[in-house]
Length: 480
Ligand code: SAH
Ligand code: SF4
Ligand code: F3S
Image 1: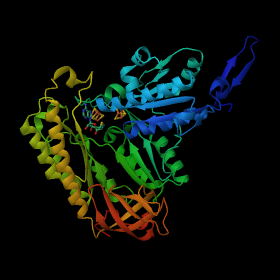
Image 2: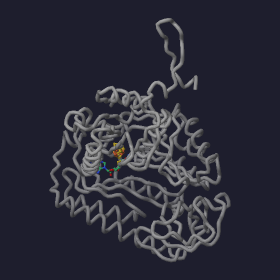
Image 3: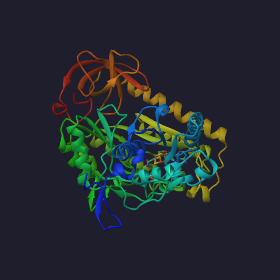
Image 4: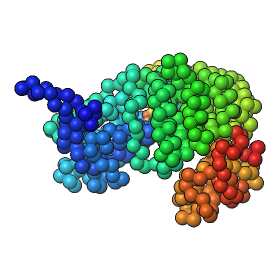
């Protein structure tokens, strides 16, 4: 406690220490609630905030109804993501009114960074605004609020990785966890607000990632997803993502590793070698294409062509037999013609993704596209193109999943299925969701499962036996 405290000098020149709890007495024993929107990194950040709050003696609760402090960790990626947050804020504000103002409302994350003081000016009932690099400051900001002031810190950092903070995972399943390995993004894709809300790219030291991984292993976790906006550009003192992944994969042969997200511009061969060699690195790659047309890709500032992308996919498939692939696609980017849209449909057909996240383009302030291009594809055309993309992709996913019938997979059971108490749900190495009867299995077990039914989103299987991951092949399904 001595180390964690800060040293103060009083008038009589006595030095004494103040523990974090005494520094902010107001926080002790109060409940706090965090609601999170956006990407996996935002969810991982909420666990960092949990840790900071718990460290100050506050208690996490799973409902805003009995919380003294309510945080909303927000996303700015598209306008509809922000609209959801506004709706929730309205709800929290009515809660606060019912309690005669006795509740602190804080906005965290990307919207906090993007809109800053506007929250305090326009939305009088927000008390605290904290950007993604300023979470260490939350206890101090809360103390300011108690003193009757509104508090803001949206300073972005070139160094902050929260490497020394052990996340407190209150909402997970105890089986799989996220670990952020880098923050920020330097890619400046012309449509994207992330470089403005998250700041410059920086990587966390290898050792701190390994330590957290080891702690998760000791705590019984069975799967870790390493996170970054572009994990392939992970670099800490010359150590790259392939090395980080390799070292993580040696920690516990019974723990699976996933990663997200990869950028097609710099996917290294070495990394594919690690995936190929290590049985516990999952054979699933999320590799956003965004568009299938070269002119659109250029305007998006995505520095690859459709040809280079397709070559990369071929290489992935030849090096990792049975690898599963997913992508992100934007419909109706500035200036996109009908022919260019057709090329996106065409690349979807060529690659045949197992899964895709598909969006209509939403203009974001400050981005290059906002400054330089006109958002000129009419809303109904964007919607129509998006629905063509979605129905094509769903058809492909359904066909691919039908082909799974009769195959066997190693599934990591994550928990009881939402549909039935007697069933477990979990994912294959290739990231497909499988539902199967519990039998003697429980969350955290690896189970060999034979698939007997499929929709475009889920597989149904029959559990054959519990297995050790280390006894299985490094390749999915095919080698079983
Ligand atoms: N760093 C990740 C993506 C993070 S954002 C990567 O580069 O792969 C997730 C996805 O949201 C993006 O891949 C993109 O498809 C989509 N997206 C980002 N900005 C958008 C915008 N302005 N309008 C619509 N979709 C957008
Ligand atoms: Fe946004 Fe591009 Fe960075 Fe992804 S790589 S976060 S799309 S700027
Ligand atoms: Fe959204 Fe910020 Fe993530 S804008 S997608 S929460 S980095």
